[in-house]
Length: 483
Image (cartoon, rainbow, N blue to C red):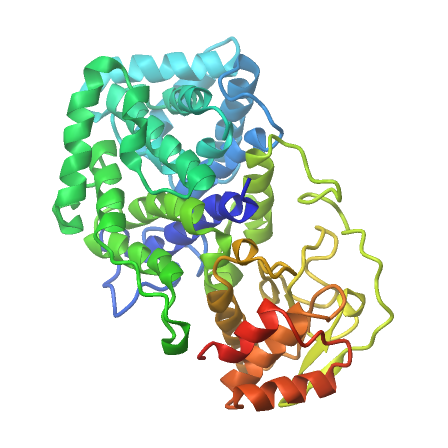
């Protein structure tokens, strides 16, 4: 199963959320492009995500253990996490969610059942306001819980939604979106219609018409997107009406830029900007993968409870693999069990402030790090490096195109983040495990960015870095991509 696409779910959601925060309900005028400015309707720091992703993290912390989210025990854990979030971390909370959580605290019994029953009572009292987007905004990660079983995925989406939003529209929207996420990860298809048969028979025709409307109408049609139906329509319309760029690396055009362009489209609709972008981002991350999320966003995005991108990746992947790490213990291992080479980083031939090295140089050189291999949580951030200055890149040491589906974009984007760190005055260590393929490839891409020809860049890097394996797909693409 594709771990790149698994990892993209929470990261895509969090980035959409943090991009939309500054512009929620018109709290700030949108300039040429959305930017993670912070502010908005709360005291958000730049890059901080809102309650949309905070609640998704609550779910993911349970799902990442491999728990069955339809079970009473797992729903108790999710409900407990929601209550703890409300008490300690909620930077914002919807009216319906606040009422339900408050009512659940005033009753006795298993907390999941208390919360579900409180939600049903609330719906009876507020039937017209019971279908807010507060369950849909957090549901994308549920699509990872049972990737091989669409029925169990749908049941989990319905059960988690009903903790706070039992309205049939709210439940149905979560079933449809979670199934779309599952399908994007498993089949690499963008298809929100594929879950219609998972809905009760009496709901299917109405929802087919609603989805067709979103497919046909422009995103601006769905401005009033606080309702779960129009929030889903706004996100889906943004996806289908934003063209996928041509894959022309020599011209700096990459298909996976679609993810960035869609989130901008979603935010430009207006109104509940962070929520619509979070909803769209979860599905786009499942389709394009975390490797399509630009490093400038991944550096910034963070939020309660002290979560950054590597935590989101860990939660997403563990959820997708049923809580079972791989044979090396990744993700979630303290240190990756590499045989660390004896190596001292060497200066980049065109910029002495960029050091080229191996995993053995980690924590020994630079006050910023760009890691091109998988690391454990005790290795990130490296000693003496701020969290936002240690950038992990999804790049596999492989010549199989399927292993690096956005290779040209990743090389160009990584060269860009190295340039950003240098512009901030950082000394940057660029490393992989043994500096044989990934480090030299990024070094060539950075040299190209600085103006070297492809031939000059390759010759200079190969001479400066004796470990270079000057063959293979990464080496070739680094020289050919336009930066």
